Image (cartoon, rainbow, N blue to C red; front, side):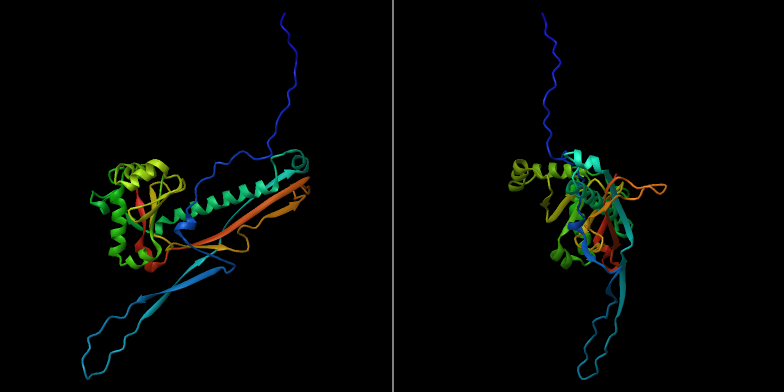
Length: 288
């Protein structure tokens, strides 16, 4: 005879949130970041460069003049994120903890910064298939031409007289995940030490190859990849709001009511600048 008892089993609740699927961010590596409470951040460059003169012994020196132009970024683009949790849920849920909520809010705001930085491609110099010796148009990235793209970007930096800044800051690429896979294939297929290292250790968090730092992001604008001398693209972040965690008891609801709970809130305010004098050494790699 079969026994069909109804059993209630003990349940184990782990006191952690499910591991998050965070999007990668590269803006801290590629941008010159200024964190300030000042709204407008200004920098100048020499627009009119004095020219070297011929020396004639025994005659007066012709002194030259120069002109400076100011570029500025304005920190005025804001985004925020707040969530409200019922007091009973806070008490009863082992997963809904303020620290975890703020950690998640911060990650999402950083992802907004990433997508916003990569949306600035209109202020960079176009780099297309003609730049690597092909016909005009977007590049179809492959394992056979990704090295051409890397070398071509460095060549154009040199042609724009940016070698000293490239030596100082380095040059970087923010590939799409599919492009980065082609780079992995190229690295594994070429060389000795680098190929062995790539095969043994992988390239999960990026790599340095062909004299450049390579990152990847899921937030590149469609058809665009960011490349060029690092720390040229300027990013301003408002110190007074970035990373600040605010907890609001009994936040207001609609119709003169309030929530019986707590709100967890943070925001970020940013601004961008591609310096005019250096726009020729940061590139919008046009891709299919």
